[in-house]
Image 1 (cartoon, rainbow, N blue to C red):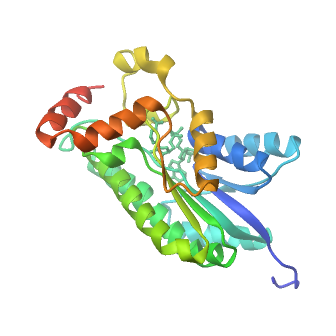
Image 2 (image 1 turned 90 degrees about the vertical axis):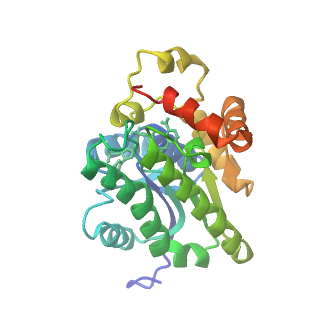
Image 3 (image 1 turned 60 degrees about the horizontal axis):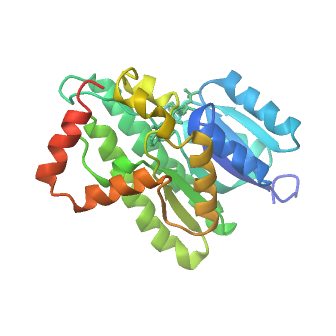
Length: 266
Ligand SMILES: NC(=O)c1ccc[n+]([C@@H]2O[C@H](COP(=O)([O-])OP(=O)(O)OC[C@H]3O[C@@H](n4cnc5c(N)ncnc54)[C@H](OP(=O)(O)O)[C@@H]3O)[C@@H](O)[C@H]2O)c1
């Protein structure tokens, strides 16, 4: 019950909902009847998505927030309270990558990547786990196929995603007896704002691959369905499943030079 004696409504929080995979995840949850809370820094993009969702009969709220800013999670918690919402599902999607040799990439940017991909994801999960347990809700964490292997020339990004997968799988085991589902969505390359932010040159091999890549919409659909089905790890696309299987089986001495070459100057 809130201060007015009313039971709070249940909400699905989607971080990084202003574009890309997060925006598609927000759409899927909204179309499935969830009241969504859209979180990111670019208010105009969030408002455009919220209007789209509401115009089609869904329910959406906007919280403009830098998840790495001071007191960010307090701000989000307060916004939920004021809207009469309690977190039932947390979709930890916000994240970015940086391609290039670790010694050459900007140090502050690399640390900011750890803050968002690992720090904010963990802090959000810890803060909202209690109400999620109380509502027998769910957590959907977005990792990557990068979570299954070390990534030379993309090292810290891959390491952050290995953390997300490890944390998610362990939490899934802990939460299962409490009726809370935890799923880790592991996409391969998806054409979004991610590549420009990471510093990819899209004119080469990646560009040729574009047609065969899984879309953000399809990744979101499979992520939602995987969570509902209780799958702990979801890897959309046959090619991505093959890549993960290869990475698991191939000796590191073979895999590392291939990845270092493939990610050199992309
Ligand atoms: N695209 C791929 O190839 C790919 C592959 C595997 C996994 N992934 C993962 O999928 C997730 C989504 O990536 P995407 O491809 O959709 O990238 P994207 O299009 O660049 O979207 C990233 C989202 O994160 C938000 N964000 C970034 N920094 C933030 C901050 N400090 N506080 C709050 N929100 C922040 C951005 O919104 P604002 O800029 O408005 O804040 C944006 O909505 C990431 O975790 C990424 O690692 C992507």
